[in-house]
Length: 224
Length: 224
DNA sequence: ACAAAAGTGTTATGTGTACACCCATGG
DNA sequence: CCATGGGTGTACACATAACACTTTTGT
Image (cartoon, rainbow over all chains, first blue to last red; front, side, top):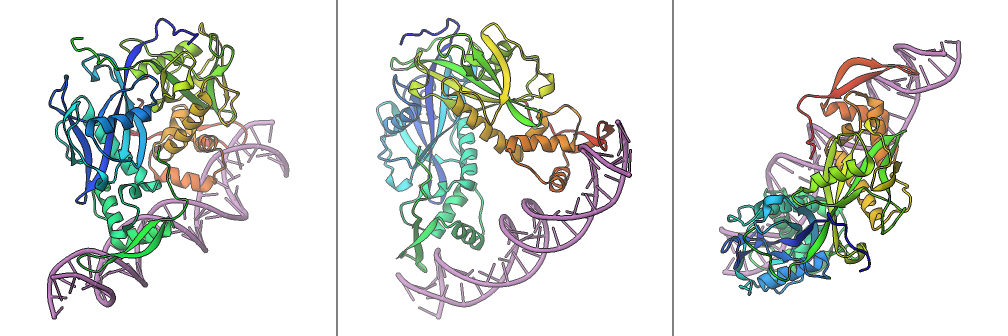
């Protein structure tokens, strides 16, 4: 490093926080951890922490997600969505947090308490418990962003396994938008987009089996 | 400050950059400065710099805009839109920049060289000169964000004086979207939104004078 | 009178939304 | 045969896009 920073440059703590979502029992859930350290000891919060030296922002987000929740997962989507830097937001000093939005398929997640956290668990995203710092605001904005993304990215598919039924996909939309959708209009719209191809097989259970679909070739949204 | 940061916390330089836009001669222009310091001496760049201690992010953006361009202005709109933190983006070390998008009315702007910059000037936003750091990427994303915002915020009004004609407003849309719009459909759509009220007066010049409008009461978008 | 820019309506097309019944399977 | 959930089509309202001529003013 041959050039130095100007004297008035602020050195601040750089953190990432992750609002990670999955669908469970037809409802949108967010992954929260119970803090094992001050400040806000024993308060629920978004997974997150300080960025390490030489670590990219999205790498830090993935690491915090893994370390704090002992999750075995590959996030299907990870995206920075806003940076929170208000002066009083952290009592330890000036800490700027780059907030990320992550999407996980619920099935692949096994949550257990990690070293730096007391617990980790899924909570209904639309009705979370009291959260540390400004994390309630961050979570709220993450949900809004998720709803917006749903419209023109095919982000809903990231919540599901490789093959899925149309009712399952509709359930994802309804969980995220927090309202009911018309079955026929939903199918019409989704099939018209041409991003789904029938996978031939059918899933069985109670009632009539549903046609299975998978994403059409060349329609990945881009993970990071 | 009673609590200390954990040892692995990275201290990084926190900067803001501002992509400031105005309409001039029917084209979208961006405000650039020519750097008076290393690195990238004598290269054009977005106005920006380090955040001071105890300074909010948006305050830093406003200060840099004023100091580096000696502009006399009140930005009509200022909005954070993305944070750039890739490791190699600045040769001085790990510097994270919170990028902002600003809208100025062109008429109120007087650009002259400031102390920390060699020059400051407006450039066509869709065809800028070579830029320092990753500022070309930042500018490109700022334009995209501006185009998106145009749709559902009434951001176009921020480019104009308090009263304006419909052809002027259409010119703003065309400059930002970089394509022509149909006059009749444009008028129909804008007037249907009910955010414009005729201000009675008419502006004179060559050709038939145009009706003047101003924004309807209670339709401010929110500056910050 | 002419040049220059403002203003004005209709039609076709596409998109979103509301709405009710039959189908296939398991128990 | 019944309970459960999957699958299907049509009609209306609304928004969008294409398109050409007349009006008002200054010179």
